[in-house]
Amino acid sequence: MPYKLFHPALLLLFLAPICNALGGEKTPAFGKAPMSGEQVYKAVCVTCHAHGLAGAPKAGNRPSWAPLITEGYDDLVGSALTGVRMMPPKGGAPELYDIEVARAVVYMVSLAGGKFPEPTEANVRAARADGEKRHLERLKKAAAARQ
Ligand code: HEC
Image (cartoon, rainbow, N blue to C red; front, side, top):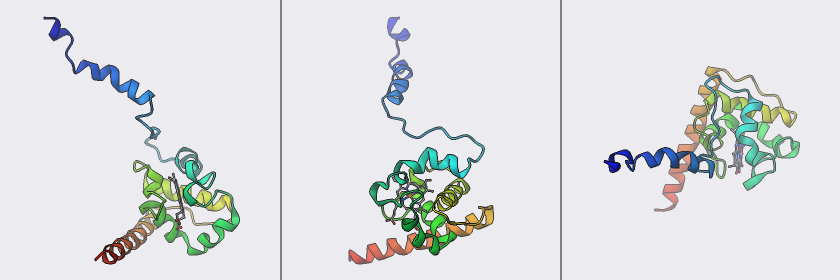
């Protein structure tokens, strides 16, 4: 009888919140409504881009961003969506909508004095396709280099 009252699965009910409190759950909860570029920056991108962690171009640092800005919207948004070197896809937050990531890129570009177009469904889709194409080329090159 007491066994039935204290089913081991009940322990999960107590352990899950403790694990979360201890840092098992790192990703902030995002609302269903798309966030602004500034909100995404502050929730995710700030971790690396505020101080230039792992070689990330520092937010607001014009010399770091100027050469990137000349690469254009498709290049930067595409890289932010699919990842490039130490930059994880979507900054490591896969639950972000593509358009939120694009808005964050536009926001960081504006912090460095640049001006990119306002993200739309169509231009974000095009940027993703561009990023995926380049990502695939990098994978092929890396695989070929190991043969
Ligand atoms: C874990 C650290 C990290 C996080 C979080 C992160 N970035 Fe980055 N990001 C980097 C690094 C490192 C680079 C430099 C990559 C390189 O060129 O080697 C970079 C580069 C970039 C670039 C330039 C890409 C290019 O074409 O060279 C953009 C744009 C960018 N990040 C956007 C974002 C956005 C938007 C977010 C938030 C959604 C974000 N990053 C979150 C580490 C991060």
